[in-house]
Length: 103
Image (tube, rainbow, N blue to C red):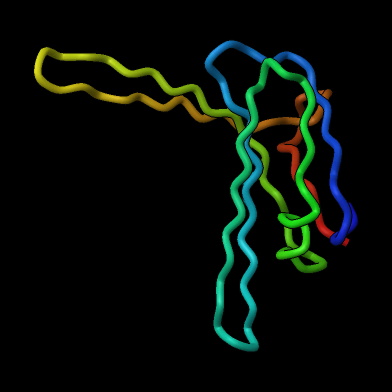
């Protein structure tokens, strides 16, 4: 995927209360800075776009990891617990974990 352009995305099999997340970590060795990018989308929408402003902080070779998250809050009287179920996104044939690489 190209570095300085908006990246349109489309997917199938979205579910209620599930987010599709894209995450990347860019480390700049020259000034010892690290930048983390996290984009969250409603999985039911089936489409979104990673904005140009997000793509511009990444460098060629950086990878975006894709995964889904389902959060469930459980109340226990005076307190609550939030459970998170995290699942890797796989290729359509379900043989490999899906990742995107910046060019």
